[in-house]
Structure formats: structure tokens, C-alpha cells
Amino acid sequence: MAQLALNNFKTVTVGIVTTVQTVYTAPTGYTSVVLYAHITNVADTSSAFTMYHKRGNTSTEVIKNRDVPPSDAFSPLDGKLVLETSDQITISGSENDKLKLIISLLETSNA
Image (cartoon, rainbow, N blue to C red):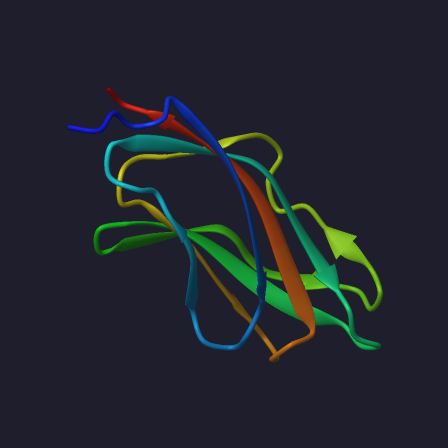
């Protein structure tokens, strides 16, 4: 049986749309830590987003309806966010293709 890597660093980027989309799912056998998250407004008008932590059927807002001014950015986390196996980060925006998200993660083997 192949051993899991002890630590994996990942960067995930997405364009935010109006439907709730899954940005990241913590893989089986790992605990993940969101080290950094950054949302940039690439448009000429303000746009808002809501970011969620999802475990099973429960979605909890990390931040809700946060407006980002035009050509500006916002970091939705003050610190780290720990995700257990199968936990997800999901996000939705008030408009399509005005906001972009980048997150940096550390996946650590539970073995």
C-alpha cells in the first residue's frame, strides 16, 4: 500500500459566480489548513460574496455578503481555517466574473 505524503501545499484559484461552487474539498486521509485566502474585484463596480465552510449537510458562513470595492481586494480569514476529511470551502458572488479567489492550503496526512 502506498503511503500518503506527509505534507502537500496547494494553491487554488477560481472566478466567483452567482451559484454556490465548491472551491476545495479536503481529501480522504488528510486534515487541511487554509493558510491564506484573498478575493480580488477585477471589475469597475462593487461586488459582494459569501464564503462557506461545509461539513456534510451543514454550511456555515465564514463571511456573508461582503462587498469588495472596484479594483480592490479583501482577505476573508483573520487566521487559519482547519478542514477535516471531506470538509469543503464553497463560495458564491452577487455577480458573475467580477471577483476572483485564491487560497493557499496545507494538507497534512492523518496517518
